Length: 467
Image (tube, rainbow, N blue to C red; front, side, top):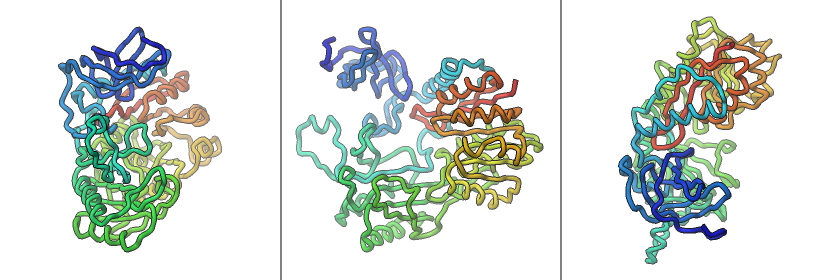
């Protein structure tokens, strides 16, 4: 292989699945990462990146499809990065996720495992999400095939998802299989209405334009929230669009909008204004209701969220006498879910607005044995805090993908609860943290829960007992 030049590799057999939804082959003792392939595919690959120990590339021709390959159901597969495993049977997806968790816990964490339960698969493999976020763009993304055809190209505006790795490129989505209706209908209606009325779609590079982002939330109670973010104020145009949505979609129970003129798309620091209906929707889990506002976090797969929390509660082994600390509590979903099985639950979360939601959800469900505190976990959870609120018998922790700060791990070890239930969306950082606790805590059970079919993402629960 010539140095510097990025070659076309022919008759490459894909050998196995790798992390982050990629597959791998081997070329001249180097690992070759190729997306949108499955083991057994034989393909020609254009190399796009060369490093000392690995290569990356994309398919330019398929010589032979693998026997295990399934036909992707979405027209946007291969361009949109949302559901990279549509070409892999769902059972194999879950088998790989389970094996990756075990490998990470053993290889990174170097912990002894026992009671590894079979992964809890998602009952739905399409239309399972309760929230999607779309981006408006003044020029839709063009595929390699469209450019190669050399014909006149229609660069109409787009409302859809960012192309992986390209901040200013948006795929115009016609139909997405992730969220049930009216999600597709609302998005397509807004696009058509905006084009008809000659509204400006956002120019991501210039950071200017009228229509910027769209969030659609649906719930297990049948409610629908739509949040339209505008890049600038145009009252006549804004009210025309929002009134048209109200008329076209009576099922929308919460229609909200944001005027966001700052540099980034996040609305957490923006005023969200209710235009029609309520400023919230509700989710239901068992006999509990959870109020979901426009900025609230809630697990995006409602059915699997219940399975995740139910298994977490079961592994916690609560009898009604325990003091429970729920770290990274978010809007208090886990804390409120386990509260009726505990003496007291203390929830801690960085985001103050989330803590206010947690308190509201306790009041909404007549739960009186919860307390919630906002602040940086490593600063709030200290020895004085534990003296004030009582020694935790059980700690439940559900940190972000980056895992727990070492100071938090040290405080947990000093608190020395009898049991720790560690919920994670990243088994690699979970394994790192388990290694830090291994001298004092033994892994007693492992339970994976697949929240995100057709992606490489998976949640994992580990139960730890004090040695």
